[in-house]
Image (cartoon, rainbow, N blue to C red):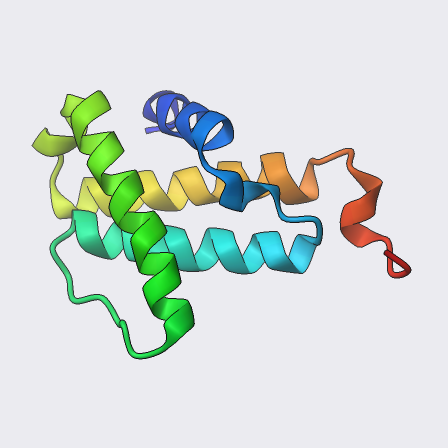
Length: 112
């Protein structure tokens, strides 16, 4: 599964501004919520849209799903379990690249 993650990660890094928040807690929340909704959409599960934040994350997830289905047609042939595993692996990689492995010291600067 790791070999399939790099293309979708590359898309996020190049096209999604939400992964560039200036605080690590913002990035953690964005990654979690958008990718959770992305997984739900890909797997045909219900998505919670009860709050304005939920709807905001949902819009980003819809855009991501549309792009993934168009650009990476192999996603369309995956089972729900494979899709869930893909998104979980993708999230772990994205968290590493944008949070825990980032060299951006502003992410954890308490005075910023």
